[in-house]
Amino acid sequence: MEGLQVTTGEPGGDFQIGDAHLHERFSHSSGPGGQGVNTSSSRVELSLDVAGCPDIPEHLRPRLLAGLDHRLVDGVLTVAASQYREQLANRRAARQRMAALLSGAARPVRTRRRTRPTRGSTRRRLEAKKRRSRTKADRRPPTDW
Image 1 (cartoon, rainbow, N blue to C red):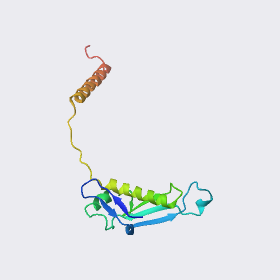
Image 2: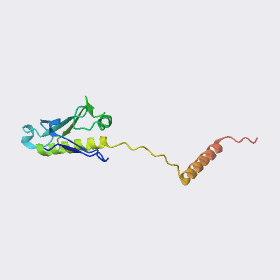
Image 3: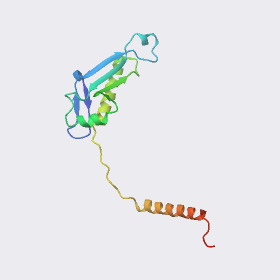
Image 4: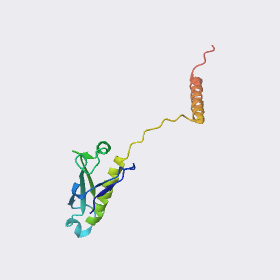
């Protein structure tokens, strides 16, 4: 296969990871497949050392490590694919899944821009508060005795 292309969505941020840094492991896949399911190793586990891969730009590494922290084990990202009966199809699926994970984590976090509430939403909020206040006031015993 020919590496892994990762797009970040920012100018000059796209990068490619070479095959030398991707580690594939094959094993028996569970599920249907007839008699061949026990003899063919069609399940693929694709691993990438995010913390130590030299193909990842240094300015993106902290962002990737922070965005993938729940999926990393000792700085290594692992993706498994076993939905297809053919090993080659599972290899492609694992690479696509890993590229999607890396692309999602490499995208810059957009900061929230504060907005003002609309006039209508403010009016509706105040009317709801008045309605609630009247409802609670009606529950109180009368004080004019």
